[in-house]
Image 1 (cartoon, rainbow, N blue to C red):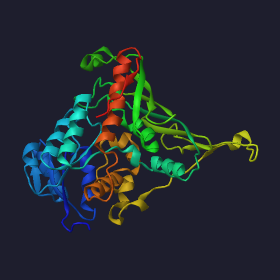
Image 2: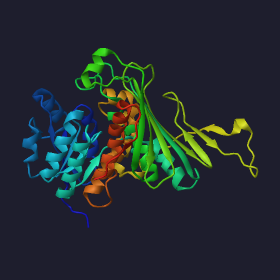
Image 3: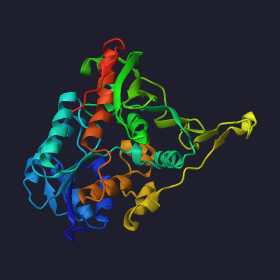
Image 4: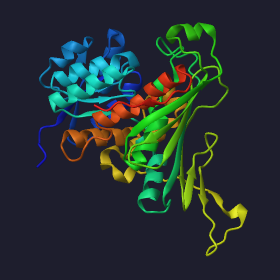
Length: 376
């Protein structure tokens, strides 16, 4: 039986993170207990705007608060691992934006901290809760796609003008948006990866991480599966509109993400001798439905960008609202905290999705050698 005591949540990082505040505030059985930001002025402005009394500039002080049950971490990428580990060790449930970490060693430490604490860890991967992914998942589960034959993801984004740690970041270090749907659909982990780098970014960008490639493209094998997936990433010096895409190639039908923002995706239907299709009839554009009906009524409206009060963060504007995923992420995380279902992705899966990219970059830097993805 669910506890009557609300789950008290603290959000760390109030740029992109602030978009989740009204979702938690409208979630049945949750309380938006505290916010954390280094900048006092920004902290107070956000606290006043949303009526949040708990305010911390020091993350470690927040973790000492016994009334906080869970933290939702939206800090810069270099802070994800240590913040997650310290929160788990402090007995807090953890939701953390992607990626889990930027090293295999730190991925292992997060997994170990989760296991020893017994608390929920969930990487808040937007794509596997986007309406496009939920649509493909529904088609697959109904058998409409048939046998999955191949999966492909791409995430191309122009990160010029982004702050601090972004310039020169190896593309595959931030690959979970295109890796995750390929693995989530089959419910399996990646096993090994081969990656090639292509092109070259500006010298001043190369100097930051010693990563020269404009594009990194990888293929990875999937444990206990005959399916291979392919992913492509770019961050700098590539002319391309923002695109997080996912294609699922099936024996009966295939789904292809739209090429340009504002278009509709395409379903290709297999022609058979029993049901022959003229070539122009094979592809059809399809409207992807919203999946707000899967959510508690109080947060359904947040699948639409119009419901976000402050949707002016670059990640939101470029990402087209992240496919309505934000309330689904909150619902999945809090359901896991309540013990109603397992976190998706849990710690081991989050590590695997992250390490596909880390190992892919290692492969690219070594001329495309095969790299086995560690298991913990």
